[in-house]
Length: 481
Image 1 (tube, one colour):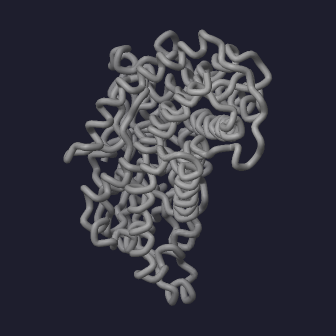
Image 2 (image 1 turned 180 degrees about the vertical axis):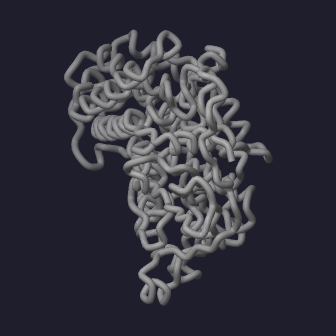
Image 3 (image 1 turned 30 degrees about the vertical axis):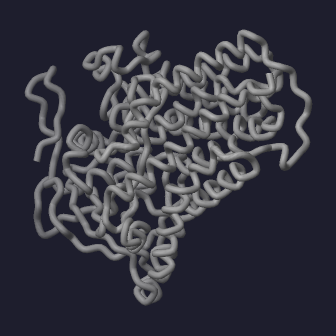
């Protein structure tokens, strides 16, 4: 069936699958190392409470059957281990049906995590990984030539990622239309990287060129993905170059890397190496691929309408399985950067000798002399949510109070999420949070002070707070100002 499968994409599939498995490994590692503090049994937003509150039809998950921190850890570390075996090529060393089962297990495990992750897993790249991982189940292995229908579905996904991001920019902030957004973006993005300061200090005419090039990459190039080869491969290459530029300029978890992986699936591998002769697909596999193609096309109606809507939504899932979603990023760009600085003190009351010491976060700006670090594709979930909280206290309402309680209690799992704990022995008596306005320093300020940031106090975010004494043995503890 030459219309159904083509050996020309054998190399593209091999690289795509290995790279996707690598992204899965990072995602499971992020879950394994952070879940206890964020969603564990004693976490900030505990999974058991969420499962009691939300019906199964809205959040299907393996943890509906059973939840414990030990079981979650088993799933997360097991997913990471399985991902690494697929990176090593395990999917091509087993029969086709077994290979599909391995990819399905990865997808099911990560779906189970995302659907109980609550606000910590509300990012677009979670759905993007699940949608990509679902399609990967049906991409086959060395027992059959790559199915063209699945490859086209991957291009359709990449089209929605790029074109959706382009449209949301043009419909959103006026600075995208007048080509000035990058005057601010590198400084105000959620988590700057080690080169973000230098990108921000590029000449403004170059920022305008960057913005215009972004529009071409997101509004024109995606259509070329559906043209004949080698034009489609060139379009995929342009997507890769654009995404690697974003990798250099900031930290966006695995969003850029996964977009690169999707682009690789559109490259004609025969342009690089002669493909081997692969077997024709078995009938059951062909029927299954056709059924999945119909399912995805039907489920694409909502995301397609969203692309064409004046009220386009970003990063929305249209079903609890995250099969077909809508994407987008930076429909608006902040002109200033505010950061929440969390501090503690040993003093039970304010006085002339009160000393407040600052907690250090791993990724978000804090110490003005600390150059931002590179963490992507690893995802620092708490640091990202701190950025949202600085935009509006409404983002912080469900979790900031419990975070403060755990810092006052000296919770080890929570402290492991931080870079620096200023109270290594005994927890502080009180904690406060203050909102500062940050900006990148100039070249002159950097030379004179060695500081990458300059900050000024804006206002109080949380007044000094201590743990309240329990009203009764069953009342528990709470943070009170």
